[in-house]
Amino acid sequence: MPRMVALVVNEANRAEPDLRKLCQWIGCDPGLSAHALQWANSEKFGLAGRVGSVSEALAVLDQVHLRALAQAATVSGALQPVRGIDLRAFWRYSLNTAKVARSLAGTLHLDASAAYTAGIVHALGELVILGQAPRVVQIQTTAPPLGLARARAERRLLGFCHADVIAGLARKWHWPDSLVDALKHQHNPFGADNYEPLAGVLHLSAWRASAREAGLTGNELTVTFPGEVGVPLGLDIDVVLQQDPIDWHSRRAEPVWR
Image (cartoon, rainbow, N blue to C red):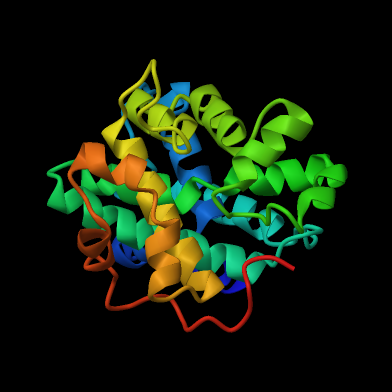
């Protein structure tokens, strides 16, 4: 988001940047978070596959790299709107997913930082697909972006889905295997060949953020709750709803999709 990019650029250009502020701002944005992890896990630092959060990334990047990251963010901030999705709503949804994922991970004694990272970047593959395969827009009415039915619709049309895209990028960028696996299996955490608790947390968190965007309440929440994912983790709908963050990012002003 332009505001986050501006904050990062201004802070990174100071003589002594405040790393706490940079961590907060970069960690609130899917694109900036992905950039930071991509750089920190690059071969030049010798930490490939070991940096799994923005705070860890900023401990690796020196001021020269921070300024370069800010410059890259400036370029990324000039991206054109992506047809078929509201980028402001996408950003809000991603941030809310990350907050719920961090909270759920804490209740299960999983890595809360890894869960937050997975939540903030998990839907970036959707932007890639919409930018490169405009025909995907034809499924908007039956499977809107960021809804839990979207992945199946994309696989029917393309043979892959947005989870495959972001997991593929994460593997190419040498992110930790646990993060790659959570992103890849986010839509089927407990399939025949895998059991990925972090992916289950991500799935439930995405459901909660998507339901909030759609304005679901009461019985609608009960009907749509993915119990097949919650049960293996020992999480029912009441426990998941109890993890709602106090600071949901803004009130819903428009739907996730358009």
